[in-house]
Length: 255
Image (cartoon, rainbow, N blue to C red):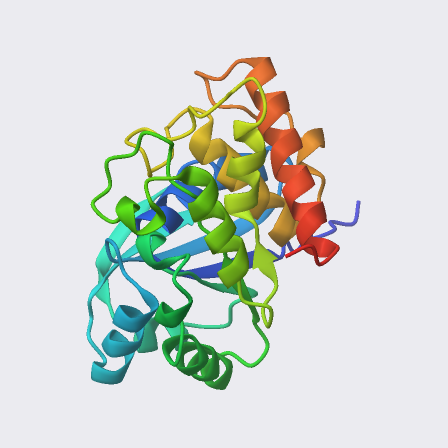
């Protein structure tokens, strides 16, 4: 009998992020991929509260500032030695590389340039074949106590409108923010955050991961049966539906 070897392609992702990418990719994305036998290798460069300006300054100084978190099907989450952005960009080829703004700056247009342009230019130089994407962050809960929430008059809708207005047009969007906002319009209500701005561990993080799952696999997350042990089937249905709708909005250039 002839043995047939099957080569499983691995989707490699690099997130140039902060705690919001931690929420989005480090807990639920690998289990979602596992359920459909999708092989992934997620590299999250974490520096708490990191803005585009801070990312650019770390790049210019080649500072090894990032906690390097790697999530794979075999090892769901491993924290490696600190690393610089340049080192990460030289560590093999990636399929997707995401950029994002610090949540508190996400609706402030003047906080984006010239740093976003510099980061895109550098990423393209090191990774010409990668798809560079924009991870859209989410507005805070209505009752959030974040010290920078007053920038948006402590108003969730104002913050969300500002984020939408600032979402870069030159990059494909990973619409985590839109998915969270859509989920808030369901029976889940304004309950997706655990502290007013970071996502809760049950269905908040799951919602953002569902967006990522669709974006990197091209598969409809509504057909994915995985849910974490604390979720109800209704919560899975509502979050998956919100994530799928957000992705379709992004694909149809509604951002």
